[in-house]
Length: 468
Figure 1 (cartoon, one colour):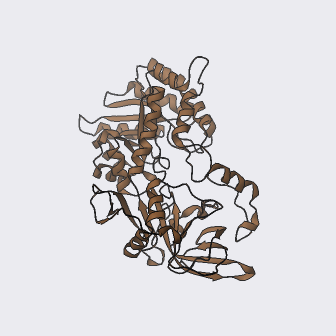
Figure 2 (cartoon, helix red, strand yellow):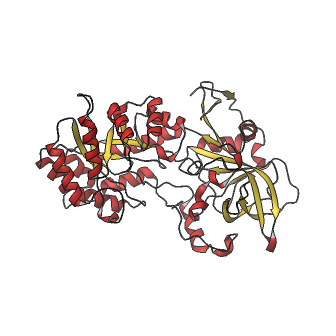
Figure 3 (cartoon, helix red, strand yellow):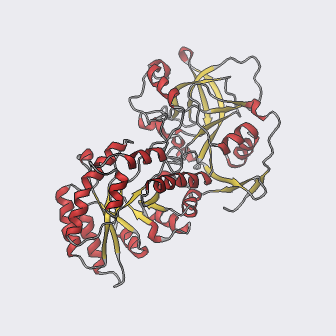
């Protein structure tokens, strides 16, 4: 990472006095971000002044630590593990580079994600492409790089075979077959049993330049039990493939590992006690991400591997005894605690019926849960630009700067220790996992928010580089 600016590591005297930590749903924080917030919040003010609001601040080193936690589980359970970073989770080039530096692969679903991974220096054979609607041009690029391709249908396999017929003689297509588990029978992704059998027959008769490496699936939700069951369903297909002379070596279970945003007890208490009165429109959302699920992603993986697959084997033992590697495609869980997003406050405005709204310089497109009829159940941290004497706690929801009535970062009435004021900052923790850029756009001609990547320099200070 090329350093743009260098900031000393020294703490501001009394810096934490202007930092108001929330009390209802306070975020869990990476140590690096906590040191900045509590020890040197003026850095955040400087960065917002220089780069604008909102500002996304990334800590790529955290991705490497999260990868190491997965790898430690695999070593304990004696499983060969391939990790592919789900690049769709964030458009940061610095995070892709961190994945390369961590020695893991990258999961790409578009030519643009492919280009980012190659630009970061990734060995092309550590690429996997899992998107269900790959174009012929994308297939050509993947073939040229020798990437692993997850085939979503019989039609995709036939399209790949047609491309190979006109490719250079040494071109080889490495492929997985995407299975549709029983738990997702109505999904449009993957193949049912009839199509899976047809693909295996086609692969068994295919020339050597079409190499079959195993099976892939991806399930929604965060239950380890559904993954365990899907692997169990695939075991007979492993044997069937081998009986046809094929050599499957890999089962890729996709992503969906849960992470913890807030303390599990606080989250459980909130879910039991909140009501429509806690929201500006009087409606309690029906669905939430399990922000306080109480289980870290690496622990989830360990629980999956030690679960019983059959009468004699744990899942880990079953994989090893069959000579199979396990692959995962973590996105959100690999960037857990790898970023914060900072919004500058414009003003606090009183509304009808005693409600108040905090307007920020930025949009809910950069904190996107409300657009999915849900809420980001993590309270922002308030950093005050100036002291406000005799100020009582304040309830308010948070809105963006557009002319859309639904441009709301938080429908929930957040309890602030004191009324937010113009030039204050609101800091949202742990936003690297889809939050910051899934819906970003340049509505009203506002440019997309800037990202900066921070790291520790050799001198112990903080290095900062633009991450565009």
